[in-house]
Length: 135
Image (cartoon, rainbow, N blue to C red; front, top):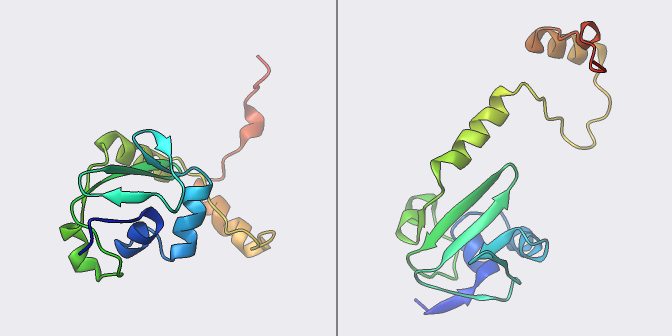
């Protein structure tokens, strides 16, 4: 094992991102932080550093335990990183799930009549017309 490896390669190896390209793009967009500073994909990471990854609505935090350049099985991931994400972040995720907001996949288009009826049945047919938001 090496002493340092590129951050995009490490994030891909420990299965935070599905592909190395996605990991690299997240770094370029400023969604990967080390010490509250956004990093470039070529930034070398070392053992003991804490990496923050923004995957809205949650910011995950991982402590680097070991370095690997090769992608590993999911069972081996705990040997290479420790999840130090605060419990408050998971509460935000849970609140987002309970909020009733329905996330449609991009490009799925307008819902069909059946999908709309199913959606209304699921959300309890919220009628916002009865509320006056101007008051």
